[in-house]
Length: 171
Ligand code: AMP
Image 1 (cartoon, helix red, strand yellow):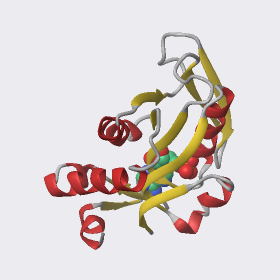
Image 2: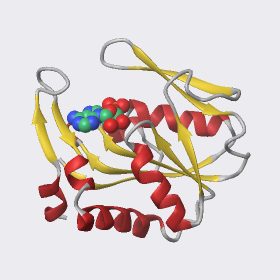
Image 3: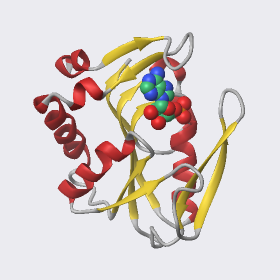
Image 4: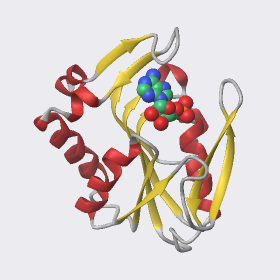
């Protein structure tokens, strides 16, 4: 696990002053790092038999399809507004300053399907909580939320109380 942390590049003051950005491109280009990250996430969820793995735009799209493939599930994208072409459900959620919107295709999850939600970083938890809400609006059952990294000092888990939350690397 320590070796995976060593593959993640920390970029201070990106995209704005005071933010320490965790850059996964240095992990992704490492063949062992990429393989180990996907394997460890799949191991965590191997017994849960999800029907659907959701990836959150944009960096969730890198990990979720690989996990879905390995676990024999389908992949569903949750996207920023006006990107998905068919009828959508949408959820608006608060950011530190202002708000944001995420969308999912209405027909992407059938009621009762078991859904795993994947993203790269759990920060404040606002994004992940919004995606859990979208899943439930469509009648999906949230099996768990999985992340490569968790920024524990932001207490994102508190926003996700009641859900199974897993992260590979904690900061
Ligand atoms: P949040 O809603 O605060 O949990 O933010 C989660 C989203 O923002 C994730 O999709 C992350 O990709 C991104 N994010 C937040 N903070 C960071 C950070 N310090 N480094 C890299 N990505 C981040």
